[in-house]
Image (tube, rainbow, N blue to C red; front, side, top):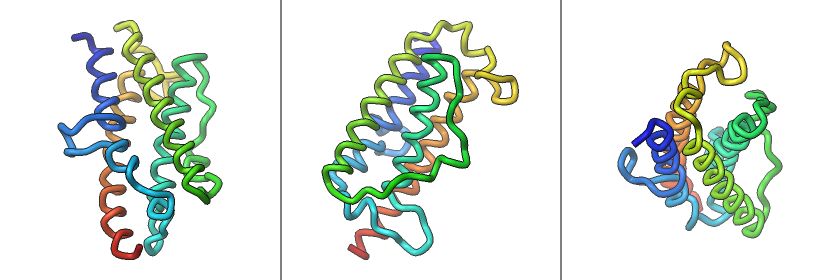
Length: 157
């Protein structure tokens, strides 16, 4: 299996279908979560919806780099989203999340092996490999938060 295939599989696992590392994934946690539970505020913590949108924000930004070589996202905007106010809005967001993830996974799978050691847009961001590995780790970090928030929010709901 190539490095590209391995990275694509790891990324797909954390978002769409894996259980090896955390015994769950984003899709498993979010698909049967209604918009009210996803948007419940537990003290000063981010909501489940905001954390999911945060990860989606980075997926779209990284996907854009693979498509056109431009990094057009900024960390300072990575938690700024309009509120989700209905089940339809929540489901629309989730569909975009799954579709954008699958598109990025396909781009990762097709990446030539020599690309992984090249700079990700600029030297200050490190290599393509570092960024995809970082995104996988970042996703697991927030997945853990979502699992805990679901448990806390369920008691409030």
